[in-house]
Length: 144
Length: 420
Image (cartoon, rainbow over all chains, first blue to last red; front, side, top):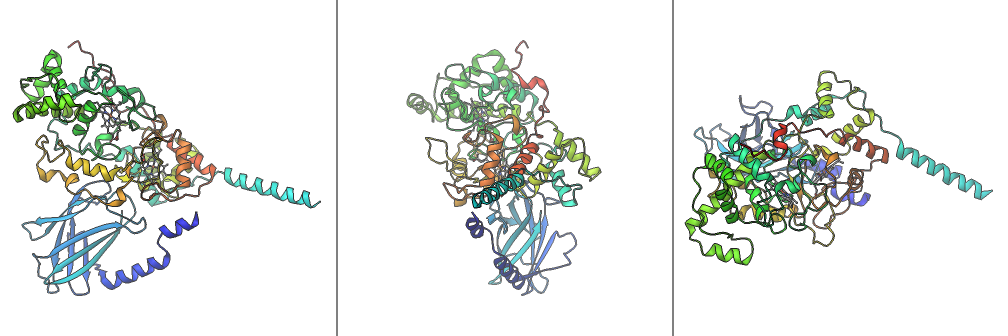
C-alpha cells in the first residue's frame, strides 16, 4: 500500500520546511550555561535553560525538568507563562504524558513536571513562553 | 513455441521471487556503536531496581508478600471456591494461561497477560484502567466472570481464618468488626443494597481491608522477575567484543535481532530490558469476534481517573504530589483503540497473543506487523514493513531467544505450604 505510506510519512519537502522554520524561530546556543543540560535562545534575546532532574535523560522514566527563563538583558524572568508540548516528528505522535509547569522553585526556576519519553529516537520539544506580553516560541531537538 | 517461452519466463520469475523471499538476510559481521547501545538497552543487565510504589506502604514488606502469596493461590476467594488468581495467572505458564480468552466463573472478554516483570509498569490492564498493581488486584475479585466474590465476603474470610487473620494483623493491625456477610457497591443488586445499609464508617473499614488485601497481592507479585536468557548473555558479551559472531546466538537469531532494533522498528515500542515501554499504541488488531472494537486507553484513562482506589484516593498511601502518572497522563483521541505494549520476555511460551488472544502464533504476529492492516478504530501506528518471509523467520528466531525460567525463589512459584 504505497499510497498509505506516502500520506502518513512526512515528505522530504515538509521536513525541509520544518527545518527552515525551525531555524527562523530559534537557534540552539552552542554554549549552555554551566550545569544546564540544554539552552535555547530566541532571536529576540529570550533564553530558556533546561536542567533535567533525571541525568542522563532516559526513556520510560517519569521525571521533571527545571526551566530558567532570562531576557535579552540576562535578567531572570519569574512571571512567564510556559506551555510545553513534545513529540516525535518522524512518528507523527506526541509525548505519552502531558507535562505542565506546576510552580516555582526557590532558585527562581520553573518546575516542569510529568515528562516521560517512551521511544528511542528523535524528539522535538516546543516551548511557548509568554513574558512581558511577548510570545516566544522555542524548540529543542534531541536524540534518545 | 511461444507458450514454452512464456511458461519458462513465468517459472523463472516464480523461482526468482521465491528465492528472494527465502534468501536469508545476512547477520551483521560487526555491530556499530549505536546498534551496540540499543542492544545493551534491551539486556536484563540494564534493568534498574524495582521502582518504589508510594501508593503502597507495604509494597516491599516480606510479611505482606507472604500474605499476598497465600491470597494469590487461595480459591476460597471466589463465589464457588474454585477460582484463584493462579487459575488464570499460572506459575508454570509465566503467570498467563495459554487460552485466547480467560476463563474464571465464566469466559471473560480479554486474554490473560503474563505478570512477570509487570511491577515496573506504571499502568495496569490492556487499556490502563488501573494506576497501581494493588488497585488492579481488587477488580478481578469482584468481577462476575472472574472470582465473582465481593469485598465484604473477603474481609469476613480473612477475619474467620486464623492463618489469614494473624498474617493480616501482623502487617496491617487489628481487623475491624464486619457486621454483614456480603456487600459491595459494584456487584449484583442484593450486595449493592446491603452496601447501602452500612454506614460510611463501616463501608470505609471494609474498603480498608479490601485495599490492604490488594496491597499484599501487589507485594507478592513484585517478586515475579524475569530470568536471564540467551539473548541477555549475548547482549552483554558483545559489549566487550563488538564482533557480532558468537556461539550464544545463531546467525538467524542475530539477523533477527538486527531487524528488531532497526528495519522492523519493533524497538520503538518493545524497548528497555522488559521489551515494553508500558505505553498505549494502536497496532490495528482486529476486535475479538462477537465484540465491539475495544476503545482501549481512551476509555482506560477515564476509568483510572474515576477509580475509587486510584493513587489520589483515600486508600492510597501516596501524597497527591507523588501521583505523577495519574496527574500528567495524556488524554487524546489517538488513544482510541490503543492497548498497552506487552513485554516480550518469555513470549515464545505465552501464546496466544494480543488483548483478545486474537493471534495464535508468533509467525502470525509477524505477518500482522508486516501487513500493518488499517485499524478499525482510529489509526494503526505501525507501518507495513515489507520484510521477506526469510526475514520474518529470522525475527521469530530472535523472539524465541527471550525465554528463560524466572529469577524468582521457587517457593513463590507454587501455593504456600500452610503448616506454619
